[in-house]
Image (cartoon, rainbow, N blue to C red; front, side, top):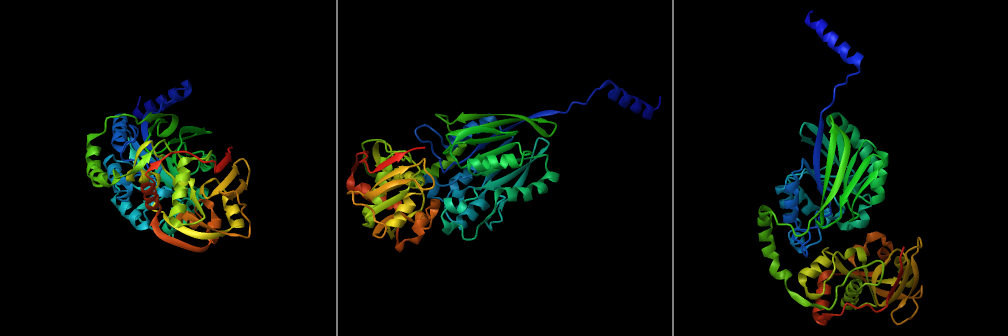
Length: 471
């Protein structure tokens, strides 16, 4: 029997007996983070990037990804415009990071510097920044498999980032950007995963529109969870390094077959010594200033959009006091950390108010004030407000001055806000129409630190100025 006949007989036997060639199975370990928000150091034994490094190295990932918002939230990150975060993520060999809205907080020039320093690509297929180092996608070869990674960023970027940092930025629709980008990757990759920084409803919308994408690593809602939408797994780890996520992806040949996920808590872990050495000079540089004592709090003070909050009241009171206005208003989303009972330091206030927001005063009519308060719950001073958050579109039930005087549509009121609100941030567009608008050129957190120094002790109590019917 010659060689050709032998090969032919073998093929016949395989086909006739129903035998099939089994494809090789491989399990990839994908570790992910998101919304780090500059949490370089642990807080009360939770989080910290040296501790995250310990968890990552223990899992020995094949792919290491992040869902964006690396920056903004702590003094050690913000004083150096995100440099320590980039240096640590470089050291850990991240493969890709999604472009988050808070990556713009230090301005385009600083973002470009950080992108050039990064040894990993920062990705967004739907946001054009003009920065060459920020790419729509990357291709990562892992154990003989070519993985395409596409980045996506929040469509409503102008509402969640200060417009002054977006002057050269263009934002496209998520579905349009993916529809254009996917065909470019298909010939060059075995499969595609997404790293995204988008709202929950957009995560679901993208998963339904592109079922071939089996895994979405995401961030932005600040929730630790795993969600399955049809055949797509969507995973996110909350915020501020409280968790690291792990996905085990079983491949049939080079195609994703099944996936499992878990959340690894970052609590009381031994810090990685190499990453701790990277952190130390940054920590030393800011430690003395951060430790400056401003006063004391007699209770834990938390922000809230569900009930009256002593922290909300404190910030709005400080704004009104410093600007010498009738009313002070602060967007609750701009408060990023609680104030704990005990000594209050400059570092604590920095974490509450990490953004470079300045204090702005303006004049609003009563009608404008009612419309903007109807959009959402806000921290207030000089007012008594009742909201019903089950109502749409206007959530405002009633508002008066704090002495009970009605707000009249045609009357004018002096109001203190921050510069993000003054340009319509958080969708609060009525502030853009304020009259006699003046940016006082003072950082909001400096107004608050001055206020606390003068008052000394914070009692952490509420006074009935706010009533909220929650959803």
